[in-house]
Amino acid sequence: MSSQGRLATGRPRSGQQGFSLIESMVALVVLSVGMIGIAALYSQGLSAGRTAQYRTQAANLVADMADSIRVNRLGQVAYGAGGANNGCDPQTGVAICLPAQMAAHDVFIWNQQVQQLLPNGVGQVQFNAGTNPPSFTIQVSWDEVGLGNINHQVVIQVPNS
Image 1: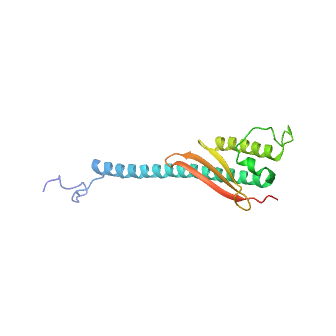
Image 2: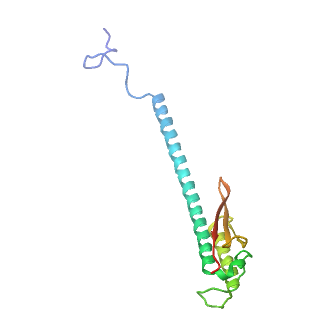
Image 3: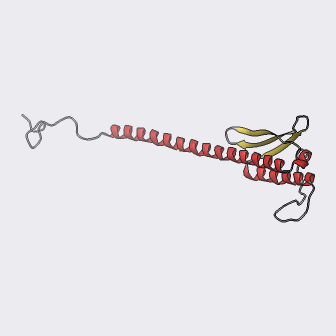
């Protein structure tokens, strides 16, 4: 019997001796596919987080404008007419403003916030005197990557007194 088929201990040599190059390559491919999947999930998570942040900002901005309208009930029509910087800032106390001037200033400040906090953000307030009590449609829109233009809209009713 030849000594090639036996080990030094006298036992026959088995056909398996460690990993082959092909087995190593297959393991590397499986590991790479798993890592790519983890990276894709991480990317989706970041995107969903950014979208949630923008939607939260939009809801907060709409709620802020609704609160401003409720506080300044006498300036109702002016909220739908657009914004103007009337210097009606309660913090600086620069000017004492009429309700309509305060409403225009509120819309002006609010539009600045919408543009700062949302990508390509646009805010709009519409006044509808035809309902009883009068109603306001407050809308914020912005551009979301991969989703296009997104709108958040709320309709509120505010009595005159």
